[in-house]
Length: 258
Figure 1 (cartoon, helix red, strand yellow):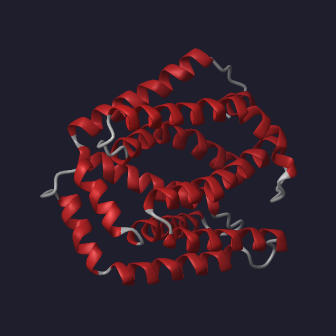
Figure 2 (tube, helix red, strand yellow):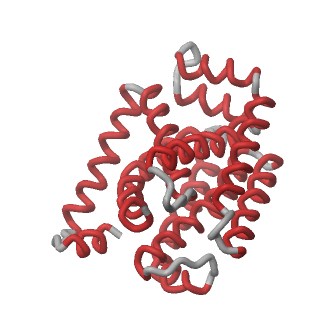
């Protein structure tokens, strides 16, 4: 994606420098997690909320300020839905990421009191946003595509935390990202699976590496550290690989769709 973006700008692409920059961002963020975990967690949450909204929400013709506001509220609502549906599990993970007497954890504990209200409000915002972004010039195909989001989020409510996040990211977020990449590369807006075939084929080696690494890590942890809870470490690792990814995708979404 970065290579294509620079090509359109008439700038050369250096794979070594790109990878070096990518890894440097990950290393600096890992250091930040070690030094200021509360700030790092807050930053990751805010960036994720914006990324969810930027990936999903397209409002052509609407002023940028309004679009940005809708994206932020939508992203916050999606994350709130996923988190407040699993308060016990989230609390367990948070105690291993940030101090229990810190501001972030205390804020979360207060939020748990209103978890039902949070779920209702976030559900309403998501529903209204789906209606807003599938009306007018939006196609029926897009409308049915957004129905999948609602069904996935309903399923996430009843699943444990880890399967819920896995379902959301694999069943929705990754698919929308692939559609956006296809639109950027091919200049074609489509919500059909067939146009993604080329992208999927290119992604197969990376998917195999990722799944193999995850399987090996899971086997090693189960064999040599059966009492170790991998969720906090997995969360931090996810944030490390996500941060540079957000920069690349923001450039794609900003240049290719706005």
